[in-house]
Image 1 (cartoon, rainbow, N blue to C red):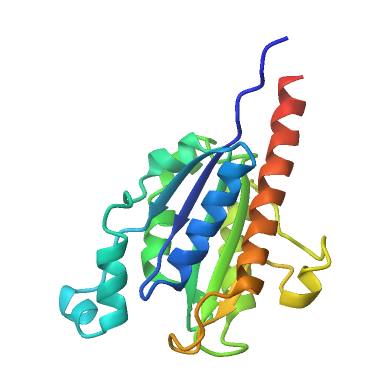
Image 2: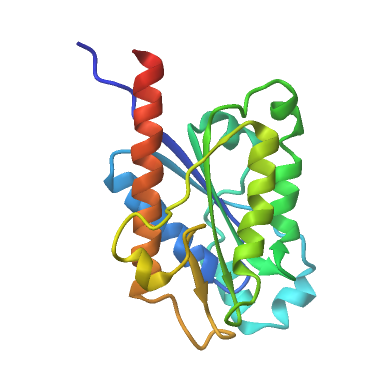
Length: 207
């Protein structure tokens, strides 16, 4: 009996000051630990260099993540599961991640995004700062793709601590609250659930 092919997970994110980048790395590492083949990719920056340089945390994160490849439609085509991360932007997805999504029109038109699994994660500067609306806005796209939405739900005791069934989220308070163990645990739960569900779907199709 042949060994089943590993689940392929693309973690695609946009991060300005580093919170989403930290969560993306946690998700990617956990997915790898669960046996998935993982691509960690960052959305192309659209902001002018002057804006980046005006914020020390933004500039520092740009330098720290410069070696992470930029996302392309090939990453979405390759993946069995796509986990997307964005900070809230007025309760919505950042323009950088949205540009990546908008580049997937060709794959969508050819039916190449159908029946993949999708999940999302986010962060905001303030409590109730648009986290749920950002994830729900992101998930509108999944419905258009014909994708299978895999959210963490209230599936473990830890979810009653972090309190977000839609996806991992964190309040960073303008950098005053670094990603903590609650958010890291949420990221781990989400990554494991995406890998587990995707693996089951992939095995069922192979059978």
